[in-house]
Length: 359
Image (tube, rainbow, N blue to C red; front, side):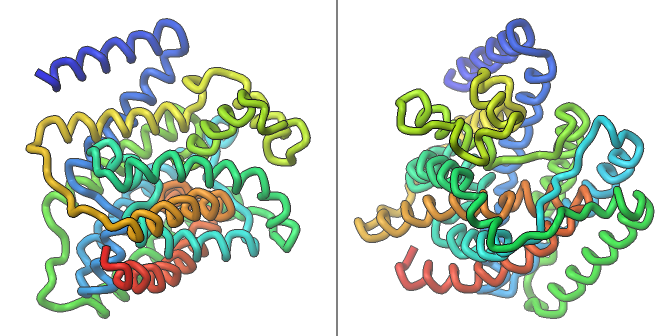
């Protein structure tokens, strides 16, 4: 019965978006809905995949992520080359901000047990820690955006897009070669007895690659997560009179100022984020409610602090596992590769912290 009510609410919301907002937003919500259902249904966790490899030398999660990246790149890079004026890559500047932000994010996501997409879909599943972390993540993302210019002043290079500089063919070849080398390294370091990839993760990788490609085609920009979080907190802070966007470097930019003052339903990142929550909720209503292990007060405090750092560092790093890694690498941004290296180093630290607090 609950699923029927949710289905009615989803259909009504889609109709409202199509009629009162834009057909594009309705389609993007459906894409987000699919993403949430796949992430939750396959338990396609980027954080868990990295942690399983670090702790148990289980390569299945990382191999599924590399397959997702390869499939998305095969579709997205030719699209970007064919429609350079209509589609944009997920570019970020190589910078001290990126190095620090990605490292901190990698550590924090292990403690908080979720990256940007993981926090969203686990909140949709009703997992208590991630449900509490979601608004804290949003606050952190807003604070990161509000101070981003100070971090960039430490030193930054111009964003570098492989497709724009080398063409789709060479960009795709280099990307697939890099992913193949990473896969070989992961297999070399993995436990030979560990599974290589489950059927569920394989299907999840394929479906997420399709949905990420659809997001690029419909929205004109790659799949993102954290911008929506920061936008929500910025809207609330501005409405409450706690923040003046006109004197802030990031939010006074024309595109951000416009987004800040228009309906949240017009923001392409926000609408897919909402869809992910709804898709995960759909999965949750179809399964028996599982009982999560109660957390101590210290664990709650550490988890919430990690959530705040997740939001702050993701803005400094120009994305999370989705915006920087999946979208960055699959659309040819050099910053995506830097993000992966630094975030994995951070995860090595984060796993130790998580173990110390017995999460």
